[in-house]
Image 1 (cartoon, rainbow, N blue to C red):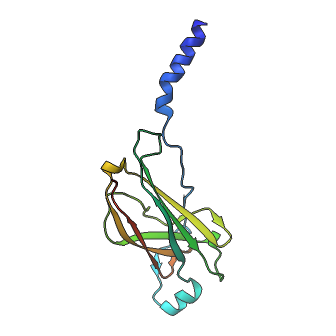
Image 2 (cartoon, rainbow, N blue to C red):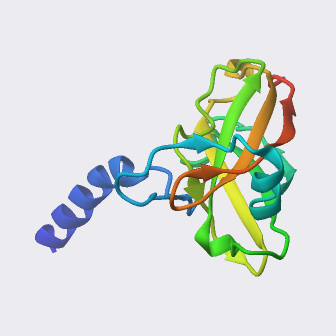
Image 3 (cartoon, one colour):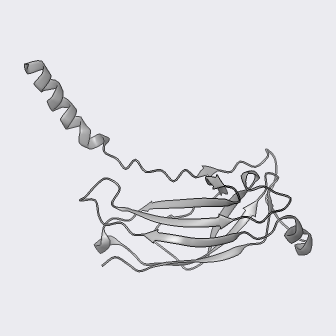
Length: 170
């Protein structure tokens, strides 16, 4: 009986350290073909015909409520849906680049390299997460972000702009 109590006590002492946030965005890095160099399309008409701009919509922004409730409650969430038109390229063959072109934020929301997200037909759901603490610690978010498709040979299509806005916590 003493051994069982000792094991339970040790497990209980270790458990708080194992309570890190277990959420995942399911985003993956989009790997271009080895040796390819990023290129913006110089001939705009040709690029748009082959690689159109995506349709991108911010579907939800959730601000953190603070670390007192559960391990993920100090995490901010941004959900962006991308719809891809029919054409030469399939959504599964593309990555998407998210680049802040206006505004600043204290949070590192977007990765530096192109990414892929889980897809459903011609639609991809991109979930971005960042640590921001509770409402009293939060900063406002006011960004213009360019979203563009990237091919495996590193060709980039024309961008679409989205607005990402959220007030600071109360």
